[in-house]
Image 1 (cartoon, rainbow, N blue to C red):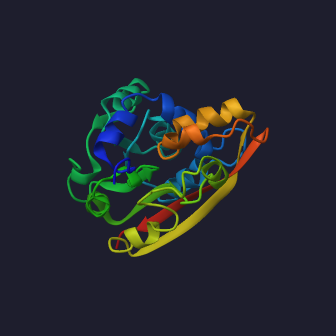
Image 2 (cartoon, rainbow, N blue to C red):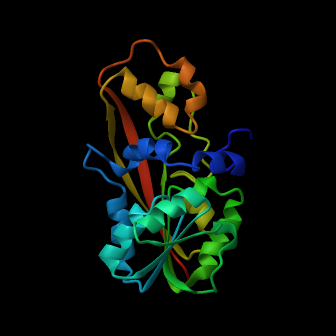
Length: 240
């Protein structure tokens, strides 16, 4: 559908620079809330004691850098956005432009693959998950983070955007992963996002991919501070 999160044209435009992504990131990294979803994600990677880790959809490389530091593993990162890869390389990350739907790696090349808030951007989700399974060794692990369809529901209600159009969510992730992985578990990381005033609310809505088309619906007066519930999840899937 037009404006879908997995529309390649929308994704290419959205990640041509990092400004809107940096504004959105606070809702799942937990800035100011002490509930950073990346903490259990990294812990799940560390627990696998990997020698080689692949991160797909690496953005500006902060998570890849964190994974390398905490695991001591070789971390390879990819993104479809040349700008994001440029930023990741600037951080010292081994990053390259590539597509999760056609990974340029041999079968079984990695111990762990990480997909943080990106699988809902993949046009052919099944193909992308199949590729992640392919490049994992037998017994390898996929760690994927995403949000609930009702993540930040209070903001969605405020502008009338409806539930998230995500194709890989808390609600659907296990079903999507099950055909390729023997065991799938989910850890929910919920919390709050507090926006100080209407200007902060407006800035966040404008930065959201799914809510920004409804920014004109924002009321003239909102509760200050405005509080919305965060609802993120980490999936840990084991390859047979």
